[in-house]
Length: 222
Image (cartoon, rainbow, N blue to C red; front, side, top):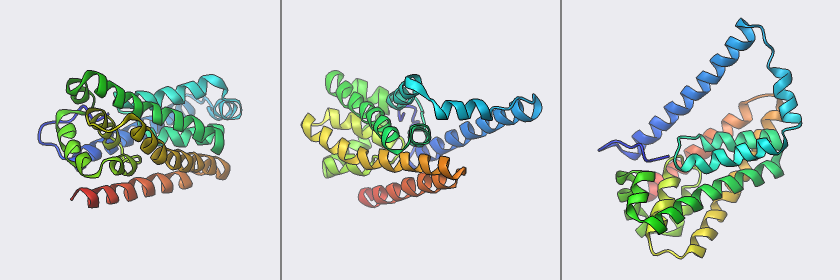
């Protein structure tokens, strides 16, 4: 979610704040695991393995909803997509991640188109909406494509697209065109990490995609 921006805060500062939030969430999970397993002596691995082996429809729905609510909550969507691949495999994991990611973007577009600037600024923040409107006017559908792997920015683009005169069909096509490779690569990262028994593949892909997307975006908007 980009709506929690502060006056005068740059895009880079907001992304750094998002990364700090992500790091804090990872640290909290690690500390909880340490407490439960090392201090309380409860082994979580069998339960986690059973969940991965037989996740069920509830897990798919949870992944889907986490990605959709990323529009209004600070959910680390890329990590959720990696988790989807780890749990469901490349094909099914990518399909679930794609549905949730596109659902989030379409929700932002439709809310802004129906309820106007007030809804857009509540979702993405006034500063982000103003900045993205200038960029969107210049690049149009290209901005939708380039921002797919960028946290915070892609939510702002979705509402700005809704405020613009862009055809709904054009936005849907651009969103799917950017979201399909994003979901597939992240799902592959999760499945590869699960098969390797290591977080290294997922971390390398997560950092690589985010860095590449950010560099392209910065060059386009400078």
